[in-house]
Length: 311
Image (tube, helix red, strand yellow):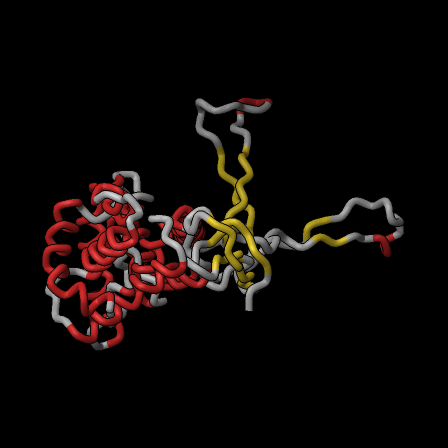
């Protein structure tokens, strides 16, 4: 049930939205874009110790940070590390101690690495407009891989690995994104597309071996991309429904040996042509991330079946 109406930049119009109370995300009901992330205050709770004799004017005090179900929530401990001889020295020439708070006496560095990875995954998810359930699924995937000692610990491949975790999470949640879309939030950009694919294969292998069977990350269909592609092209509800119906008919009645995003892009192009929207192949390519040549080839394959797809 929709909570209110808000302008959606992907749909290019005001649409009904729902609030995911579990994650605090405001989500468009038309294209599933996260319009506002983390509406819920995830900060620590505040307490006011008025009963301690300080009265109502006492400053409130934090009572702890928000918990993360994917972390051990090990209590913080204080470590004391001494600066080297080149560091600031106190009276008598002795090195001054440096105070550092870390998560737990043992494995603190590993715990911090997990925190950093989860922050990076959450940031990528926000930039892609992914819902909280996908973000948390990606964290779970990463945690399992970490326990299997399969995560890269350093180097430039870490953000590609995070993107691959999000790719798997999107597939698991039935909201697939293309490798190219995931690549846009990595440092390497579009050139990371193939590397994300390799990392995804590795993830499937590791988690499949963990479960003792081939890992199933869900089947992707052209219809899974249609709503998002149509929204980016500024289609109205009528055109969007026609595109989704065409994708459904194609799946049930034709065997087209092309990947789902190519088929979805070709159907999108056919719809804008039939609607006289004045969109070019280049426009569709920019909106979908599928190469112009690929769209033209898929369009050529589908054209003989246009009557069946749009009857």
